[in-house]
Length: 112
Image (cartoon, rainbow, N blue to C red):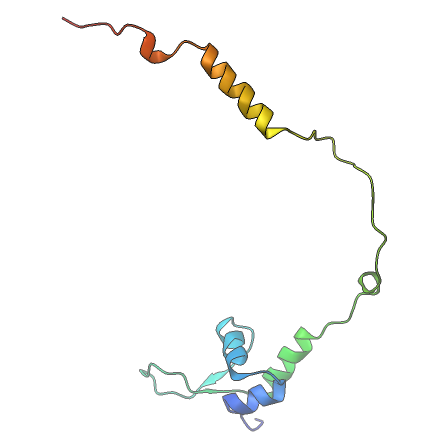
């Protein structure tokens, strides 16, 4: 087994801050060994260098050649939707509501 690294040493090896390392641990992206007592509330994390290397390898990215250059802008409208004039639509709906007889104008039946 390799020599285990503390939280600070592991963060330095990955060149990230301790807070970021804790976030990766909490997300389950980096494995750790907990050396705390069984019923302790605090974790005492140490890291295997092999786990850190696996994390770094998994996160390694290569720039995609198709996305590295600028693409020409596409112009023109391909949409079949019409532009709406919301103010005119609202006014027409209000006019329709005024044309309909209101519910309060109808006489209510009285029960005896």
